[in-house]
Amino acid sequence: MLKNVLLGFGLILSFIACGQSNRSVPVETPAGKNIGANVTPDGAITYTQLMGKMNNIDSLAVKVTGTVSEVCQKKGCWMTIKSEQAGQPDIRVTFKDYALFMPNDIVGKKVVLSGFAFIEVTPVDVLRHYAEDAGKTKEEIAAITEPKRELSYEATGVLILK
Image (tube, rainbow, N blue to C red; front, side, top):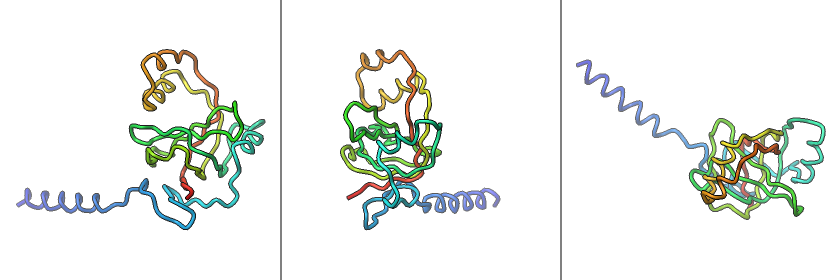
């Protein structure tokens, strides 16, 4: 009897868990596809404007717009945004609590990010992990020998513009 009750309870929990929505599933909006927290383009600044604001601070809650230059090809768990100006480094975008995953085919698409920009030093092992996720060669990965001080971004939501 107890076995049947536990089995029934397990089945109910399974149905409830399967019915939960996946937060990284894109939701169509008039502006484009929203992933995670609802994001609108209103008030978003460009990469160049963000760089100007980050001169004397370590972090900033801000909406940023930019063009995707790279996406993690394993899961879509990170992406990079390129500058409008040549010669500037890309901004690495990760997702709060590893909760969002980007489609792998959005390179070249314009996006609006909602979250926090911050300066960090990325260790060699993490840089190598990112390079592996991006499909870099073993030689390219082995060539990474120094940590990198860079502007990063933790997004709570992404709007992929049409």
